[in-house]
Image (cartoon, rainbow, N blue to C red; front, side, top):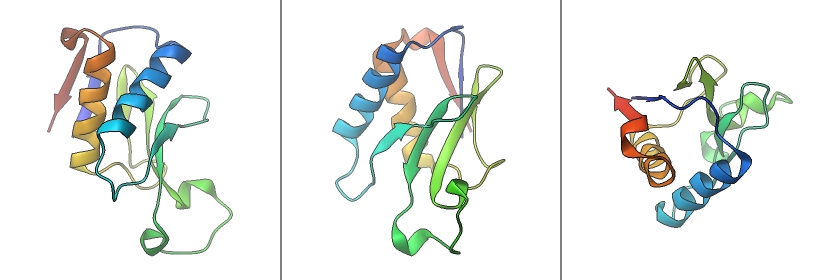
Amino acid sequence: MQITVTFDVITPTQIEQTISYYNQHKSDDWNRLEKNEVAEGGFCIALKPEEITRMSYNINDSIKQVRWHQKRLVGGKYGKSLNDAETQLLYEALCSVFDGDCVKIQN
């Protein structure tokens, strides 16, 4: 699943509102969504210890993430991506902050 948007800018306040919505509505056994502190921006979730497949000093090996690329949140290029349920909730979180017509999700 992939999220696309039509807006050009997401402000720090909108990022925090998106994260807050996600974390308030996530399953209790899921880790929290956080801002991905990379040049492209995006969102990340720390992996649970049992999900980490190798010990590494590379942060990409210990998180699931999506990064902004041409108005899309893309994952997989830098490591693990969010699963479908996490992506669906992130979509709902973005829709809660932005007009639903500005955010789309595709399989």
